[in-house]
Length: 180
Image (tube, rainbow, N blue to C red):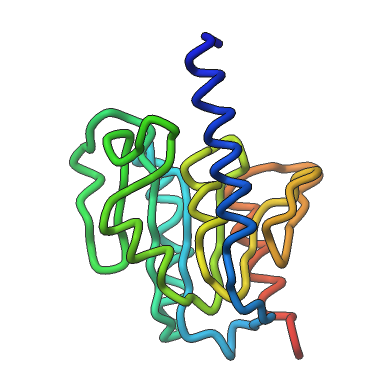
């Protein structure tokens, strides 16, 4: 890694920790019956990932939840599969500032919305998504378990099979169990 990239990542880490401290959100555990709105963050770089997410988004939509899926495209341009639709929006490298902080009106609307449940389907290696999770004012944040990474209210640990499908299945299982 070059000196400049290392510097950019260190500044990003500083900004991330500052956003985490400044975030004055109201925390509250929410099950699927009580939730009215659900935000989903994921890696949308490949069409395969987008297709994996569609049944997960449809599951919540069929339960009459207000669902918004925001995908990060780790590329310099968007392709045909990244067309925004009713429940799907995308952002890409052009929407990141010099310190990898995501910035545009779609992102601002997403993080300022008070979702009942925010689900992150990426690990902490996806820096723009990690930043959005920290900045979001969602009441109940769910994500993958990672050592020394405490920004979620519910962390799902995947021991054997670490796939996005397994994570989505576990999330559906646990949010149906909460408060029953």
